[in-house]
Length: 51
Image (tube, rainbow, N blue to C red):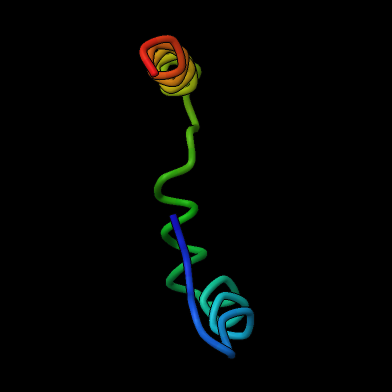
């Protein structure tokens, strides 16, 4: 999750998203196997049911 507050919040988010570090983070956390996606959906479904 990413957030920013203040008068320059949109600029701060834009700069962070455009950074190589954020891109590498996105790549490293992306689901690349069917099992990962299946587990994420199951977790999300369980969470929605219990909340």
